[in-house]
Length: 163
Image (cartoon, rainbow, N blue to C red; front, side):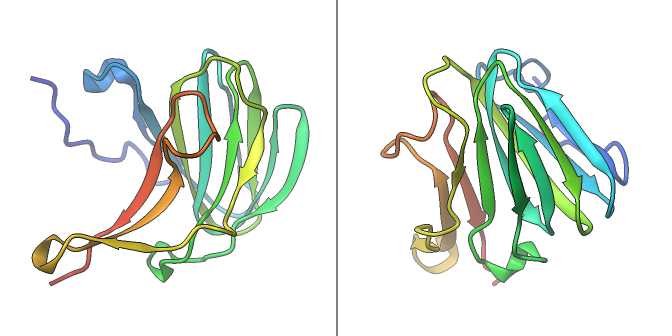
């Protein structure tokens, strides 16, 4: 049985990395970067497509040969506003530079080269409630199967109320 409880392996820089191999999964991967103002991070996507999610803070982003400018608006994930996101296809590189302290999630899945790099929202993304009572949760749909943003990646952000 694969141990699914993962603790951060640092306090800044790349603090989480979950690959299909390390988790015993077939497709999805997840990394998390905690950057201080002025720090940079970047990777090649290889055979995977990624969505960069600016969870907290602001960062300048370059990806797939383009300068995407400043992404990020919320300074705390619990503001429950939609995060800024960028889709980066397989066979590309990306780099972020923190304009403020920031937290950036890198969600990945196998890519097929069927989509160009693009911003996803935050316009048009609204917090949706699901469930009732103690099963209530609030969802930001970042990339779902009914949208043609990616080849195979599905990403949501879930807030579970404290009760």
